[in-house]
Image (cartoon, rainbow, N blue to C red; front, side, top):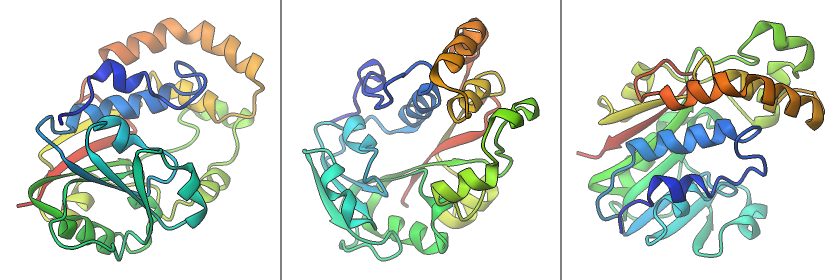
Length: 242
């Protein structure tokens, strides 16, 4: 019950244009895969995973529970997951119930993030894994200032996404989880960030596609050369419960 091989995992990127509009999500998936433990994981909790289903993609042989505060997302969960309507700050599970817990792009949406982190630590077994991904505190949109004229205002986008904070410095997450992470991998670097800006721009698909084609060689190089410690605008982390 180890994690899915990287190639098969990336192939399940839910975006219709996986290498253009969805490249940023592919980068996120690769970073999460890099830090995810490969040992036997039998039971996983995905917090805030009503739409993504990444935990089930990452550990396809595991029993996966999805918790989301929105009951309307129940019908959108993958068929092989157990959906539970619940709050990240008050999880309806006993202590040490899971081998792994994921908080993928979740904490920046939770006002009382300390309670969400404490709950994740509570429900994972000793030695179990907590996978977190989040924007860095220096994240901005668009990344390139010259894109502002064709991109939606950052505040409007963050409000639509339900952010209550921009992101996190590593030290802030260490304070939430009580120790340094066991592993970390950045994603969306200064080269690939242009594709991210384009993906959320106001440009129609044909215009975006042309710009994607013109800049693809540089972006491909930026993607291929990106290492876990490379500069990035977002980061995936692994914590282990003591």
